[in-house]
Every structure is written in structure tokens, then in C-alpha cells.
Image (cartoon, rainbow, N blue to C red; front, side, top):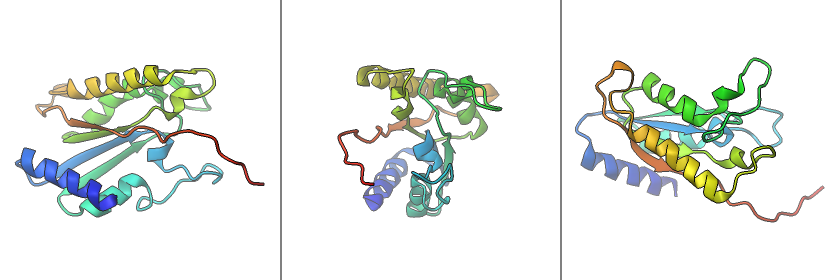
Length: 170
């Protein structure tokens, strides 16, 4: 699967880009940040996170930028915590800044939506889909963002993993 993803990215950009380096922005929540389940708030190493695996598979000529944040949501504010205002957990508010900060960006991979089902927001799958689509629209409208002359990036969406019944082993 990893090689297939790398091949698809390579094929896409060989056909569409004329410069030597392809910049990929991985924009997501704790899945992108590298949260270790039951790890006490620790994260996987760069090479273990999916964005790091992608970077290693793609190799030279590609830069994968990991912009993952625990508790990030699609287009709604999160809860205020210690020093972090909940509005900074709103992907729609922070995606334009991430694109501008890392410009030029050739591809944005969106991996958001999991936190939109948390208690308090209780969104439906349809509402989350619409929210992710709004993030894609933000990225595709980012040409010339913040005084730059860069084109808007292409968009890929990774949907959150399926939820189902599971058995808790103690």
C-alpha cells in the first residue's frame, strides 16, 4: 500500500509539475501528529508517522511537511486548553496560514474529521463530509495567498478510519 501511494504521487506530479521539488502538506489531527494510543500523550517518531513513511517512500525530490495537531477539527472551534485557544483547533481557520507558511505547496493532503464526532459537536457523517469539502475549497482558492504568486495546491482527502464495534480486552 505504501509503495502504491508513493507511485500515485510520483505519477501525478511527474505529469503536472515542471520543477524539481514537490512539496506536500499533510494537514490533519492527532492521526497526522502521530498520537500513540495509550501512550500518555506521546507521539510516534517522524519516520513512524504516516507522513514520515510517505516521505521515506517518495524519497529525493519530495518534501512532506507534517502539520498535525491533536484535537484539530474541520471547521469548528475546539475546547480551550491551558495556553491554546480553541479557535486554533479549527482547521478552516488555520489551513490558510499553514499553506502560506509552507509555500509553495503543490499538494495538500487533508486528514480531518475524526474529532468532529466528539461529544459536544456530535456531527453527522454528512456534516463532516461537507466540512472537509469546505477545507478543500479553501485550499483550492489559495492562489496568491499572503502576497505570494504561487498557484493553489492540488487536494487529496484521506477519510477517517471506519468506526465499528470492538471488543475491549482487559
